[in-house]
Length: 126
View 1: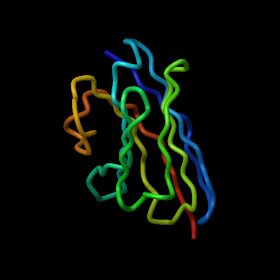
View 2: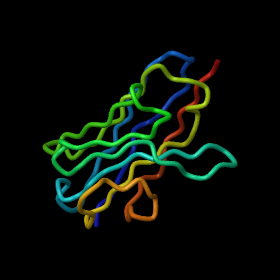
View 3: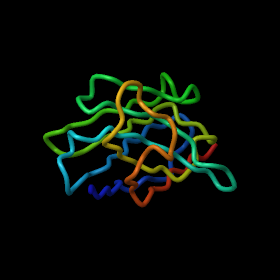
View 4: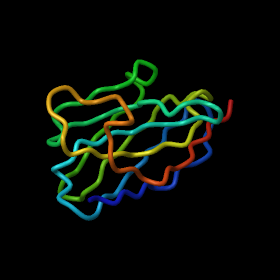
């Protein structure tokens, strides 16, 4: 089992940048494929980005492609999400998630991820 703790999000203006981090503890971090999801009020949780165990493979939602970057440092047991060119519609509670059994293509489905952080709020003002 792995425990995940996200860094504090923040209140930023449209066009600003922000970096989220998610620290893992417990089992070997490199066993896990990692992802970020987000959930806005009244909406379902949606996929944002995912990264392979080695960090060599990534996938992004179309809505964030070219603006957000997911990365990981297995030596520090941490996954990051760099958010740039933020828009008001990026406002949401951001969650990191982990799964250890997947093979092949990275999953974009929340139900495939067994472990979740508590979430961190990102608010983008216009």
